[in-house]
Length: 483
Image (cartoon, rainbow, N blue to C red; front, side, top):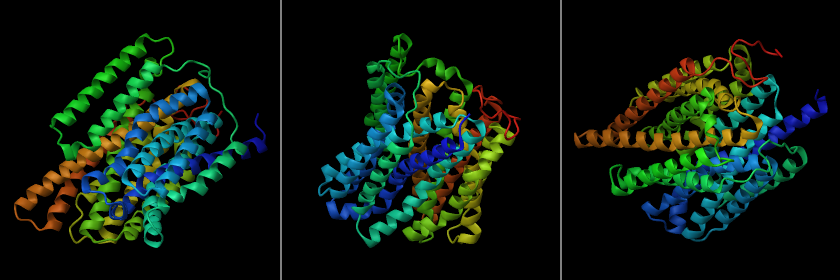
């Protein structure tokens, strides 16, 4: 039995882990606000500016799976510190960058460090909290950081860029990274998995990482290059070929990077599909609604950040207490299904928002529904993705679910942006005013995002297994506090 002192130290360790993850989550959105300033200062062109974002996404999305598995093989604590150091030093490089090449290269290293930290942090939480009730609460805190960090990044990015300069959106990571490093070494115990000491499957690592990087590159450049262009189709074809080679390697190697038996676990496979669909829906909410508020309603960056605040506060209420109680009372399927249906309803409301929309009538209700739905669903989705795996595969499972979110978000945003642009172009060609054409395009994107959310909800309700296999995990009808 653990002592109160041990329990208290675990919760302090959770805070440290979440602070490290928050730094990574913030970085995915804080840069977007500063892009105009970066473009003007470093003389980026429209086409080259996207690499400030894409260089990060490329290494982040491509290395999540590898980062999680490296944690299983070489120690989660060691890998977290390596990833954190890489990310912090790369942030210094970004903040001091005086040329395009230095900034883009440093952003790529940031993505690598961020991938390792993100994948390893989730597996550390699962290993530190083995009791069902405590694990649900801890995952709620983690879920809140992941869900709310993006909106905080918009606010912080606007504040730092307007009061100081764009360099500070990166330099602010230095004291945070140093603090997390010091506290992590002191508070987070070394946890060991059964996979430690095994050899790295180098062939599998190279092929799956290259496959994911090519897929990310094709997706994030799909709208610009054209989805039917030779570049996009060639990259996607190469990605699929490398994935096939990866699967062939994994079926034969003695110690595979990804044991294929993992995909026979219904909850692991289903929750990752849900993650892809849900991320696509949430990217529709975050990015498309921000465009609607800025380009149609005329909100400034700070106003956009404040508009997301109600959803974040609701997510906080669920993630920091209500979600764990709901999971322990109702299990995983109900909260996932109901939560994603509520989020889809919020997106559908946005699909009817008018050109002259008002915050109280046309933005706030949608934000509230999405906040409730996301707050209710994120915790059980992560639990479903992680609960069935053995401790030796915790990092791998974490890498898988984070990769699903990343790929789903990137693909979803690309598809929804294409649908939106096509509808906007058609309306503009028909003579519609710019605001009307933009709103019509956003409506299509919101509606498509709602469809993604509904499909994910149905998978959660009818495909997920009722009770996870793992000992101590919350069963479907297990009351709170049950053994």
